[in-house]
Length: 429
Image (cartoon, rainbow, N blue to C red; front, side, top):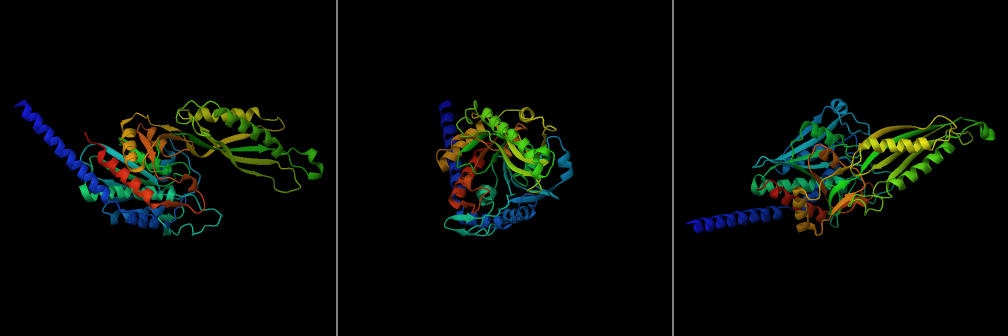
């Protein structure tokens, strides 16, 4: 009798596995590369430079409706978000903050977040083969500003959700896509979305990661420094104090600080990187006339933060370095912390969600190594709230923020299929 019940249970389990595998096979077959390419093209044509993302949000809402995925446009209270504890900073001017939430119903109580940003970095002055916002499709790629970073990943995610919706009706757990603004300048869009709803058991962000699974990223803090001097005519420059001359030892000290921070990297996923924690002065402005001693220099930069390091400690260390480099020829350089303030992030490599995503990624993309990356991302806004989060997306990061950006359609198909596998397996058991 007991033996018969055991056989019956085994048969029932085998039938369930067969149904599950059949559903997964049907969902994967429903993902259409040509349709993904068309939707990425449409989204690229909706210009959404950081600070003005509404066109892309509304375009994505229309795409979701066409795929029978329930979505809504969210207009956040900008001033309330700016005043909230944990405000992550911003750089681009904006008059509104909009995003999109798309939902796939689930059979169980667990909730999975899929998050991606719709804002893009402006195309710059370099010439493009195709106009930056043309969304041209050809030779297996979609061209255009933001196609890779990261409208392609957002569309692939939506197609994964739509395939599950079309085949199975619902997922084992509720799935929520957050399509957000302002990632490029600090993460205000994701911050606002999580202020409204952070009841998630895990999150996947399809940033371009070359099919690796990112489980740790560095922080990045934007700063501005001001060095003062005394103006004088060039003919009697010794009567003045050059702010540029005063800045040079500061610049050298910052270079030495970068070397010190990267000299003994303990984190096993960050240590293999060529430069885990970059420190860059990216903008300098000084002087008003070629024959006048410059009496002010303003420098703007970005400080890398170690994984696990308190951003306040990183700020204090840089301020000490700048103070120590002061030449005493005038007031000490003033440092202010402006723009995006990205803390670091980490999800344990042995977390079940990491294992789940890595397995799905390997089935579609091959190796799918667990890695750390030297840039800041919205991932840290999830881990700060105790939500395990990883990033996993297509290759080509070197094309992001660059002229002639494009994304390979077949890469997006692989991402969509891996995300579909993750959706179907999340919340089971």
